[in-house]
Image (cartoon, rainbow over all chains, first blue to last red; front, top):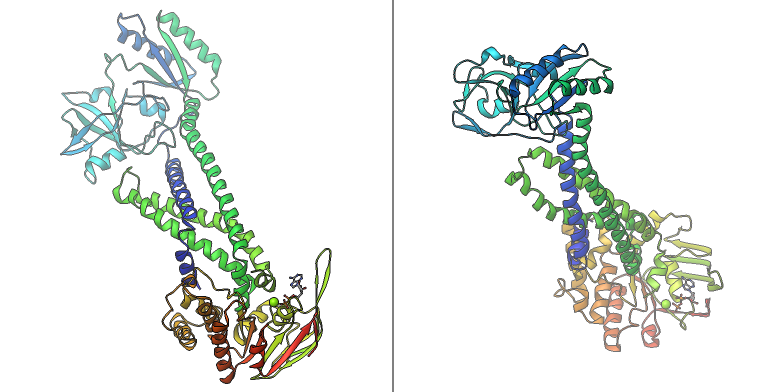
Length: 384
Length: 220
Ligand SMILES: Nc1ncnc2c1ncn2[C@@H]1O[C@H](COP(=O)(O)OP(=O)(O)O)[C@@H](O)[C@H]1O
Ligand SMILES: [Mg+2]
């Protein structure tokens, strides 16, 4: 029966062309969306690599003031550390966790190149964010001897540059020496992919690294926030102070990822509903046009349920047809490795898209095919 | 072979009630060639549909090979239609999107015949009706007479005991009609039981027995 259905569909391919194109396009759109979702779900399931609750980022801007900035930064840092509400403080570059800022640069080791994110931080950074070490230790100020800056790298960068080699003590780009390795650092939140990262020790005179990352005791609230803003303002006149709670910034970062996905999901749903309604209409019409054939098949020995199975089988053949064409396109992504996404993600996305398409066409065919099964053969044969 | 007892068929729509068959008693013997005649609308097709298990009578019993089929369910009726009965219609009812060969194979799709023998049987049946050289054609490329020969091949491909033909020559000119009649006669000579509805006295004369209907009642 299946070869028979293939022949039937193949011989009618011209009149089915539009349907095939619609299913093909739906398949590709679904494939794209499923890829996006599979990537994000995959990312979400990987840990951040640090904790963010009760951590605040205090952005300092010296604005017009240009007098002994480094010194003033140090005084503010010491002042913050002195509050009983504060557990730890660290000075870093503007790309603090969940911020909109980003910094990256090329780096190499033994001809191997990578393009990691750079974070410039002081020695307390790992303590503030609770980042566990997997090898070596976080850099101290005393590590900064000779011409090499101490750095910590994440596992992703270690794999990219060293694979199985021990990275500790190695020199990168004739500038940095590795003193420690951390597992992950997904600074843009859970939905970010685990990208290569480097942490480098900040120098006192690099005053543009003017964000104070501060872990406060649980339960510390906006009253304290107002207090430190006021205190800092009285220490350094003309500076501006901006406080971000990392927990809030994280939500913003998530929305940045989720909103486009949700919009895509809504658009895709509407598209699929349209295709489904079209399909439903075409199937109803085709059954009305094929009453004679239905009657004939019944006369030749088809049961009612055999007829409805045939119509569902036909739409499956059609969908399979369309998806095989779609697969030719979809398979290019893992083959050409366009987006640096693992092949497994595409395969999962393809499977999801295939299942959803089969589910939709089956749903659309269910009612018309039941109607077809109910057609009285004697009546249908009589009509022509 | 076929035994109809007190058959009555009433069609009910919301406004009217049509008595299409009224107290029909008919016995078709094995190997017989029976023709049914009567004016348009007198119930000939209905009678053939009842005999072919395509339609249920409102009253009375249908026996096939001595077995009453009144209580049979869809699946059993479908199996009987497939194995015992071959249908031929005035308007051929070929599937235009399938080749001649594929059309003829259809009855075999509804029993478990494999692809290879299925094709062989279909080719045999087509050769028998003189269309061995038209198997790859599509129905649109055939004349009316050729189409009806394809339909006959389809009716006989499964080796049914009974062939039911509803005005098989009704859409054909007399030359082609005679050709079809010759084939049916040959099939009957080879042992097939045939019941044929016709408007043509000449055709009817070539059969063993004539049944006349008038307004749903058997008058001869
Ligand atoms: N499905 C149906 N519903 C209602 N009336 C029908 C149906 N089929 C046939 N009839 C009626 O039954 C009568 C017999 O029809 P039919 O057997 O087709 O006649 P014939 O084949 O002799 O021309 C006609 O009056 C016809 O209108
Ligand atoms: Mg008729």
